[in-house]
Length: 182
Image 1 (cartoon, rainbow, N blue to C red):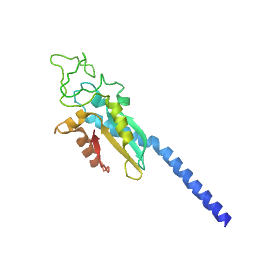
Image 2 (spheres, rainbow, N blue to C red):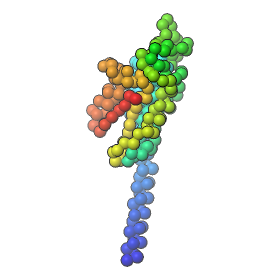
Image 3 (spheres, one colour):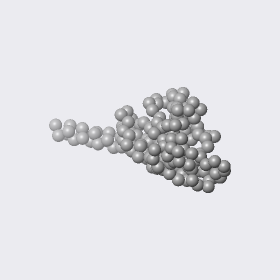
Image 4 (tube, rainbow, N blue to C red):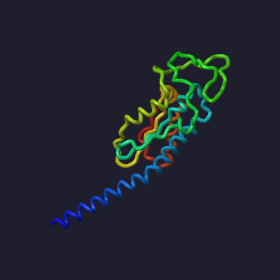
């Protein structure tokens, strides 16, 4: 009886060690996939005229295993150009001499159509992804554009970035439940 218990214990230890090793080996691959998702969303923003840079910098993709956050990929890391300032609130005019990306402010300053608070988009993306716990078993991703302005854009037929990205992933055969403009 004790030999059987010892053997069962050894087999369990081997299975657990193999599982842990597999997870560690999968993490870098899954982070590459998160980066790919983020870059597809960034590509969809081509032609979008940035103001503060928060929309571009607020794209985040969380990689989860069995509902546990394993890593976050942020567009701000890829772009390496921080937002020029915190987000604007509805009715507020942009107050700097250059827009994100370097275009000078000429003539009328941009006035925000939406927004209720000031924040940096990348910080909100991290908080949002840290607060989520997908209920799916196995590996999963959550993508977000974490600025109020993203919701505003999502309502416009020619600027609905997350809907376009969702459809693109679905056409690739991905099992997509939700991409969020937060």
